[in-house]
Image 1 (cartoon, one colour):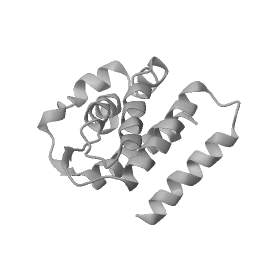
Image 2: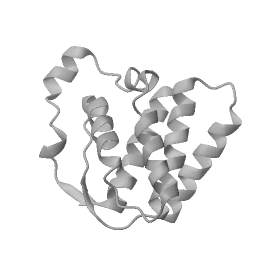
Image 3: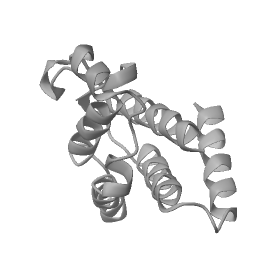
Image 4: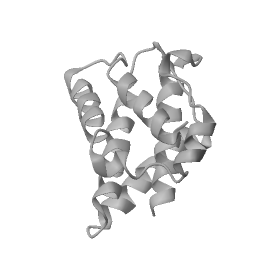
Length: 140
């Protein structure tokens, strides 16, 4: 877990150094940074996790909708939750997350958020970070 936190921190630092980067990269960096803050101050609860190749947009929306349900210890972390939820609604992110063609997305038959298995909060955040890193890598 410490290695993943270091990796996320290194990615965020590198991104911050790239001032001329696109708005979507900067937004993803901001979200990853806020998610890292939440990961350190979270109390246990259960939330859903999933990813499929052509369901990235759907997965991102489910994570975005569930991030406010994480049980966190203080007001600063609640603010981080709101920042993540707000940033992931931006059209620059929503429109750029899927590399699949519309017909591929339809055939993937992405499930609803409610239909996936639940995992504990830490695993939820780790899975969310992995998805964000996957999205970031596809944009770079």
